[in-house]
Image (cartoon, rainbow, N blue to C red; front, side, top):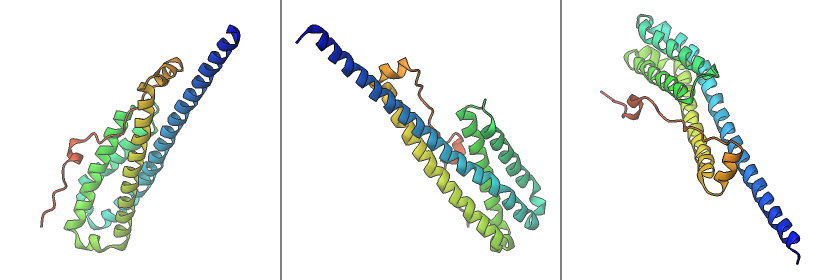
Length: 189
């Protein structure tokens, strides 16, 4: 066999390896973007449910306006961070953590108002928000799994060579930022 045939075979193998590596990185990047989109859908659903919940609570606990205003302010802040292209993932996570914490205070209000707790609209909205929160958590886990795969491939040799060559960047995990959310919920009777 002539030397040029061997060189062509080696170049062909290297080119094939580069194509497969590049396509693998593109697939992982797109999967992490899709996973972020899943989080995005659930966050928008949460934003849409909150005004209905607030209106229902206002009818029963109108003098609890400070609590309700905090929830509205947290929702607006989270929506602003969510819609801002300049907001970092950390800023978005902080805004979402604040919103989740303020929602807990609304549900705590229902314990003080038995009529509110018995209201069918409130119960339905509370169930929908709980379901949405569960979907957000599942979406975060899915996103973080995809980010882990992408980041691992970007760091592993030899795919790290392709990642550097084509400017693939590691993505941030979506984590709970607020230390208060890491604590157990206090249940008092």
